Length: 546
Image (cartoon, rainbow, N blue to C red; front, top):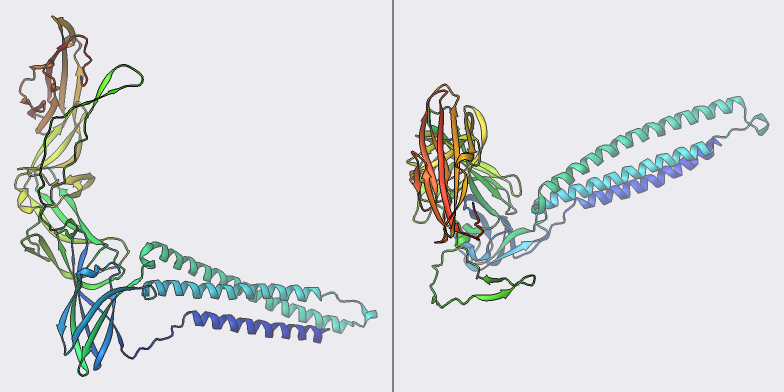
């Protein structure tokens, strides 16, 4: 019986070994790349030297150094952005060759990042399949062994010595199989963890991994063997930068420290390794063609009367107004210790002295550009009509010389993050106001004064009066300057008249209806302000906006 079992196991092992070697060979073949040879073809990679990142897109300057034989050669240049604009490719340099043609193409088999990750994933999955098969083999081996474990008594020719020998045999084999199963289960778990890591890496890189590789096919001819050094320049989509600021103030007596940074992103399909970086305020996506004026026609607008299905009332349908284009972005200038700022005719360039590595498809890279110390005056603003809190603002009067681009700023005051604000909205103003956050120690209150509120008939009109009491309180231990804002309605109909009756000490803008008080509050001081106005309109008319 023992000999019979050993024969079965030997046959079983030989079949499994053949299966293992076959699968192992398959896994090996998955990772093997067969070279392709071409007599008139030379492959080389472009070495990226300098990258200029615009607000939208990037210009890549690269170098190629290689040798060609006499005759016509197709030079296949790799490490080219997948998003390259074929019309922007420029090639020049040195060497005894004549350039016959330039063509950009995409190689769907040449994405090294994709091939490395996906091939590693395939190989690991194949290894896991082998381990899973061996786990099943061990389980079947154990089942076969247990199926033959029924030992009969001495009448069937089994002696105690035979029984002891069989028990030793089963113990040895079961221990061996169990140990092998535990090792295979651990190996299976390790391989599954490895597969999960590869899959997560693929997912984290998004569609970038599935991009084809960019290549430039350069056809050259040479009378003799030659060494050539080429300079390559082209524009790539899928890259850009946006400004972001950090604003820090120690207290209301100190200057504002402004850190100017750039959020640089790129999804060009190639990694930028140790390249010189320049950030430019230019935006090639806007185009540089001068707009042309066409004839502007005018005529009388005749409104179309449309009957409401649910009533006899008539209404006018007016044409929709056309939205105006946004103002162009402003330029940036000034210098910092690690950045050389160059003012060109159409833009400003920040030449970064430190080489950068920015991976394609990865997280945006934060690049420091400049640091400024801004002389600031501080004031509090409050609009009790909408919010009871006061807002501390920093007022910068000479900010235009920095020409900051529109962006978001993280605000830190007295060592604490207080929120975000918008900076440099693109409008030409003398002063820049930066909100530094709320101050709960300045309290405002706006309430209706019932004794001022009335509604009277005046001939064929209605005269309606409104009154509000606004209270400000400073519970700080120091005096403050505060600007309080409120408003009165503006009439858009000659039949409606608005009269400001009482707003002592306020500057009144009649075009916008805005009221502004510039006040000083001493420590623990309360100040009360009255606002009264009247609105007169025809009887029987419903007035909107009151």
